[in-house]
Length: 92
Image (tube, rainbow, N blue to C red; front, side, top):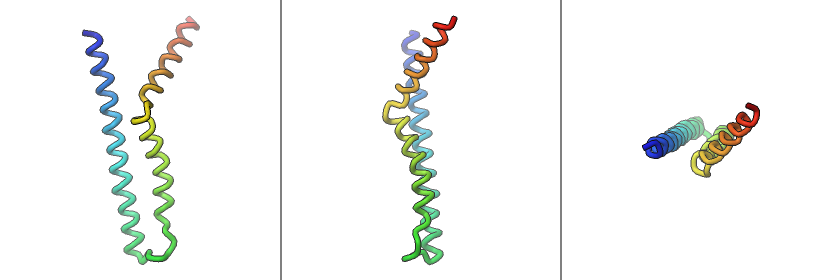
C-alpha cells in the first residue's frame, strides 16, 4: 500500500511539473507573438528586429525549465535530496 501511495505522489509531482512547463510555454508564445505584432504594427519591416532580445532571454529560461522537466530533472533532484539526507545522517 505504501508503495502505491509513494508512486502516486511521485506521479502527481511529475504531472504538476509538466503542466507548469506547458503554462510557461504558452505564456512565452503569447507574449512574444504580441511583441512581434507590436513590431510589425509600428512599421518594423526592414528595421531592427528588437523582439529577438526578449525571445532569446526568456528562451534561455524556458529551455532550462524544459530540461528540468523532460531531461531527468526530477531524478537529479531526487539524487540531490538523497545526498543531503546522507550528509545529515552522518552528522548525527
